[in-house]
Length: 425
Image 1 (spheres, helix red, strand yellow):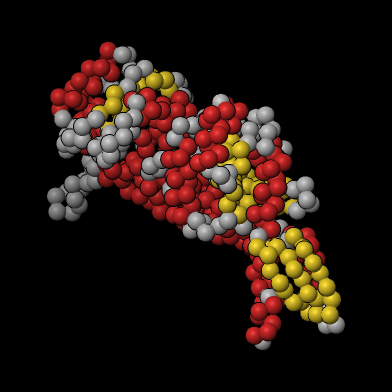
Image 2: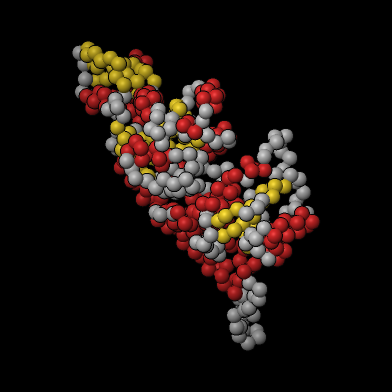
């Protein structure tokens, strides 16, 4: 099992860099994200190594000479742990710990520790426990030096008895099955709540982006939600939804989601499921980027990729560049050229909020269309006034002619009454 340590550890992060491209990246930039993960987990970086040759081996994941060099460097620097920014197998983990006499972790285990410390809701806690158990299962054998057996019966009546490893493995397997059943029940309940919420014609918008770009801060600034906001990765894991009214009077539901991250371990994808579902079912998506981060472009691609994985890539989105106050004028001009459709903003200084509200309102308003409603469908007309942007209304006997900009569920409700559909009938 994975112990969640609260004390502040010292560690030596290591990252394996293959020759996948010709980009020259400074060592500090290569390990910046791993160092942030370590800091969030309550650890302190004392030294680092970047491997520039891809020379994997079954024993250590690299040559034995380089492994010995790293182990010696860790001891000299006073590190108590070695953390790898690439996945190591259970066998390699055991070999590294024997070689270095230190605790050795990989990126996946560090993220699991952070998740376990931050999960608050029942589903998030279940998902994290599931990821922790599935990660620990193949590593159980390394927790035992002597694999003692249960006492068996006489020869010919019972077997030799199960080892303690087999008992623990069966216990973990049973717990995994139980957690999966509980998660299925929680998801069913959440789906029922979502159906009830969809009966109220209020558009929803999910705030997504890389971790620590200011999503919770934006939600707090717009709605006063009071969500925890810290300069740490994964400050919040659970989705938070609040009602927000635009200056035009349009009301929508804003949802703060968990931050994305590069190379998220597959066993942790389910731990994102609850919050990612909010993006998949939202009428629109706000993609937030940290404009001051030199890897903002890579983070944007990561965010788009994750949205595609949860089938939310087709949602209309508004790109927002946060933390513009940290940039000089030259960098601001460069970003405006690179992302001409983005909204520059500083949540900290509350700059750019007027343009943000204007662009969000236009995004939710959708495309302009002509509709011909029966005179008795005043409910649709009222909905269009409430959630759309009505341009023109005229009455013709039994029909209401409506020119309006709509999107999302409102667009779907009006589509049977489009002018083209009426003539087709």
